[in-house]
Image 1 (tube, rainbow, N blue to C red):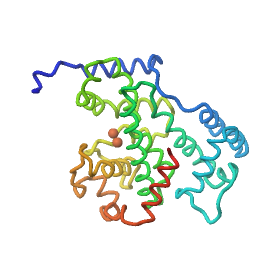
Image 2 (image 1 turned 135 degrees about the horizontal axis):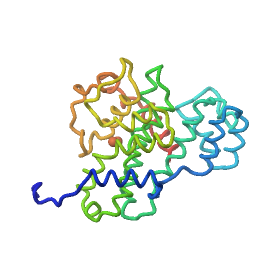
Image 3 (image 1 turned 135 degrees about the vertical axis):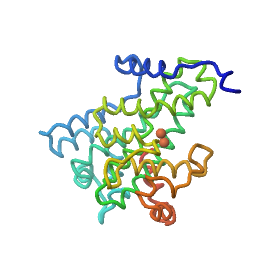
Image 4 (image 1 turned 30 degrees about the vertical axis):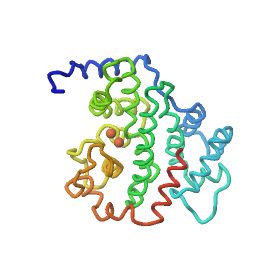
Length: 286
Ligand SMILES: [Fe+2]
Ligand SMILES: [Fe+2]
């Protein structure tokens, strides 16, 4: 079909309606689980102690078990095994525990009750976990980057796709053709992701990731590798071997890959330890 045969679809009008829907809460976006929101409120309150956070998290046995697992994961592997929520928070540290809570809550955000979207949402979650684990491993090579933040960055980089998919259910033109939907998702998921994460008060570094991860020609703000670089590289690696875009991209000419280091990238998947770590992290997030 040539372009002239394609029915006109106004992406800009679609984007404007979507933003207005989000602003006025007219669109039902997935939310974080109540226990995570409660825990985040406590973490963000300067008057709270580790014991306060531990008390909230312990109310939910599944969340408690997952946080303990997080503290024993390759992110924090220590000499001794952590066995309680309190020990887990101590090991993770009060500052990073916020990222841990958000990462462990993300699974619920990538779900939908709308059947026609389920397989797409499932695939998006799988991709996000893949990018998150790769980003964590890459970030571990840079002392100025934080592994928890890199993991969360991977999980949220494509979060802007979700509202686009939900809104698309009102447009048969988009639901009928994967190709049409892909085009709209590609165009809008970064600005929408940026908009969502700013509203949710995420760290500016993470908002940047949502806003710019697919811009291969972006101009970095500083000399040091940042989270956008890490996610761009993890994203490119995640698409390798698939038929999706960038599958055949020449890594050696991509600026983010050069900044992160071509040798590091080439050797990333080579060790057994890395493979084990990757699958352990991905199990933990699911
Ligand atoms: Fe993306
Ligand atoms: Fe992606």
